[in-house]
Image (tube, rainbow, N blue to C red; front, side, top):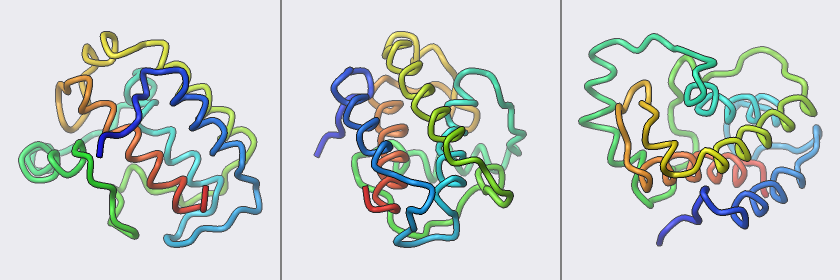
Length: 152
């Protein structure tokens, strides 16, 4: 089943509604992160897209990501619960819920405004150049996974 398009305003509004249902007291159905850490974690792909973050990824890891994991990251099959997290995506320190919630909403809106044509010009740090549908699936799937983790 196809994911909703992150390039459409109605999808952004639906994601914003789900994110708005979270509170600093929301608890996870699985995993180790609290809700504020999850929101910060979900900001990382956008930080990478907009050049605010440049994580060093080894050649071996890039090879594995491109040739072993890419298909499962950009397809339309939801992530399973409690999958391992890449080291630079792990949130160990405390985060401010309201700040992270606002940051994530801003990134989602900024990405929608960038649109498919703008996003395909961005190089993913591990997967390289992606098609518009691959970017859509990667970003929507990740957000949906973590929003379901917290029951929204």
